[in-house]
Length: 293
Length: 287
Image (cartoon, rainbow over all chains, first blue to last red; front, side, top):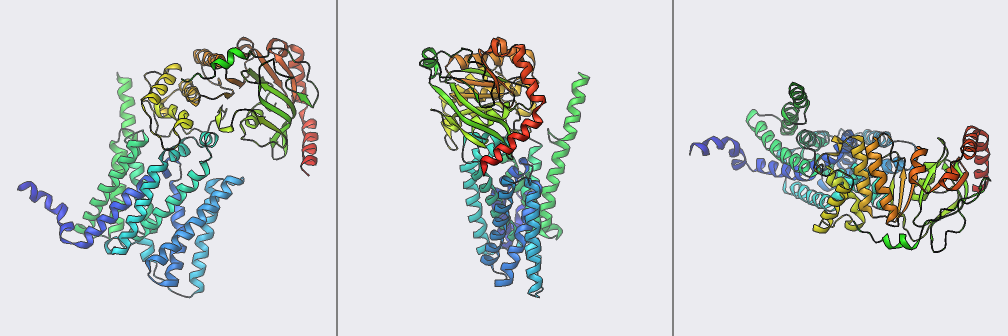
């Protein structure tokens, strides 16, 4: 009985309030879809590319908003189009010129961002982009939840089918190019997954924080294991637990939900830095132990 | 490991003949292979380079299946470029390279500058298992037989007991052994090795050289770019001395003569003018 009581604060917000249950469902979807993509982003040293891509989809979503108001399909399609265009153009230039991948992505996302801002200013409209920037995880309606579920399902399925390809592309891309023609498909397929998850993420957490649920659990998990399979599982687990605790923190401390979730995930990263077996402190402790022996 | 190529080796002895001077710019790699030994590679006026700047030019000839061939030459001689051309990674500026009876994806190519990210969270077993791509592709799982092959390959290169070690925790020699184990699993009829013994210790060189001999014994064609001439004299019956063009090709002892080596150095040192001439030639050809 006492155990039940002690657990009540953990679950009662989700039992009592529908919007909390919806928020939790949205976060679970993002944890399953976006976090594994974040693991590969991190392993390919493209963590900041996720941030750049989130900027690249922002104008598309904003243009969708301008055309059709706060319309889920319009903003989603706009974000997808802008993100995919930037992904294809930057990937194409990086693979066929002396411009490296980071510079290529930077140039196209800057073009996309500035074009978006220009379009908005030309229309003379004071668009409220707060929804796009910071999301509305506590106001997820049925349509948005369905969209998150569909995007997550596609993402999980694609990752499961292409896992070996994504691992090879991340670990030894030249070897993949030698043994298979699927190298470019792995690259562009991964960028499509990234855009898909960022667009899903901006509905819940906003473009600026969608990257948080990708990268922070991935970086935290990397401090615990050094094999890709367990790494993916632990990252997803950290994302789920972090989202859950972040929503609770937001509820009990009356804080905005998006930042509370991302900050909680950041806390898991800091904790992993301190106690993770591959973190800097553990490494130092281990080497000291080695020499004392 | 599958040894389907073993029988061919017995039937097709390598042509060890010294094949003449081959000193002209339009050089010939080989005359007709020994009786019964079909060619696996044929070069037809092959010129390779980067950004229209030829690194090796006007190669003609064939390499017989089952050869164990060392490619030696000074820095900048175009040795690695030739391997890239053979593997299909580099498209010829002029002429062509024909791969006879071997698809591009069937070639095992261990390049000098690996793109492997050794910090990638992967253990030795999984790294070596990549070599099974042709057997398992993107989707097929590892059954008992394939796991057995992986274990044998790891054992063969002396990494037994390190299957679960992250690749980032391997020494340079151990990582190169893992690369060789991956090549073992590729079961390739044509193996290209680009300076495979750089920065590894003598014991590793000895073990990996034994593996190369084994591949040769199984009838595979092995072409290796090497710098250690003593090693080449001991291990490789045939050598191609390259200095942007073929200086000599044939039996190793004859190719690695003082005269040939001096000429290779001479060509390499005076390559500025020749290189420029070759650029002009390639540009004319591309118009």
